[in-house]
Image (cartoon, rainbow, N blue to C red):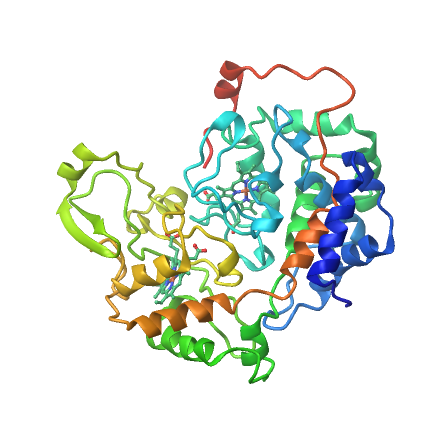
Length: 411
Ligand code: HEC
Ligand code: HEC
């Protein structure tokens, strides 16, 4: 595969901006765009160094990727046609959102959790921080219907809206030999997201490619700290590939919401003291409790547990943890170094006593996990037209009451 350099990718983005009307992008036919787009299909077949082959439930075609990409960035998927998937999963921000710990959805309603980066989502057996969905095909209904996300009152209303757009009718037929229905809509969004595969990082080239010069000695030392500190017990690195996750759920001691018996209070940067939780709640607002995996299983032992996230591209996907409470990788390393912020965390999360140099090395290692094609994936994403309000038919006014009554409160 010919790789676009950062400058070439930027040139494509610029060209798209200059193209003016959003519809112009759909017509883009030049060879750079075509080449970039076919890159995604190739990623499925020949995964980059450091990842095994993804196994999609059905063959992913160029037509279905193109359709899914278009839907992903189409604001007409939301009730008032203002919000798209790509506005919370922003390609240039690692397919997540960096400005906000927890994103804001429909009509300014906040979501209680941090948006996960969508790189390598094809490999995840359980989706969401609590793992409550098992496939990308099922997952899409949550954002489409959640009142604080795309805010649609029903799936039927989304399908009806899409069926009024003749381009889509043709594209769905061409991709799946079927019209627009619940299945084909979920297939298209899933097919695109599955292709967001990213690896071949400097770490991969060193560890799996045998290139001793691919990373600095700080990164190599950092990998030793990573293993010696027990990080790799949960963020797994296998013999010939690495997902950096065990796909399981743990409580690593992220400070809990609600009123706690003992709360950690930061009195100076890095200096935490234990205070009476009830007393603290009186002086500072507490964040709402998030029971994590318990929400998906109802099992008491699953309270406060969250999915182990992959560490691939982690340098691009701040802020961190399910609630976005840690702003930088340095903050995450400090967090693990002090043994988390909650006394009842997993027994493997203990104070580490790392030196300043070991902490810096660990961060250097985490920074070496950025895939070589991230700019390419972002540039590819921007070849999608930004679908906007329907040109035909009147826009239905957004009725707050109607929405609240019909759409469930989502994540
Ligand atoms: C308003 C912001 C917002 C919008 C719009 C949005 N998402 Fe998300 N997305 C999130 C948040 C927050 C989560 C995590 C929720 C949780 O774990 O409970 C998430 C989770 C996901 C996940 C699970 C990823 C993983 O690693 O578990 C996928 C896949 C996803 N979204 C795809 C989509 C698609 C497709 C759309 C459009 C149909 C969409 N999102 C629209 C914020 C958003
Ligand atoms: C017991 C399993 C376990 C161990 C050991 C562990 N982690 Fe994690 N790690 C997790 C889980 C679970 C989360 C997510 C917590 C959350 O969302 O609240 C996480 C989150 C992270 C994140 C944030 C990623 C993101 O996208 O938000 C980083 C970075 C990280 N861990 C690095 C490390 C490092 C470095 C070590 C060793 C010092 C380590 N982890 C040890 C399970 C573990």
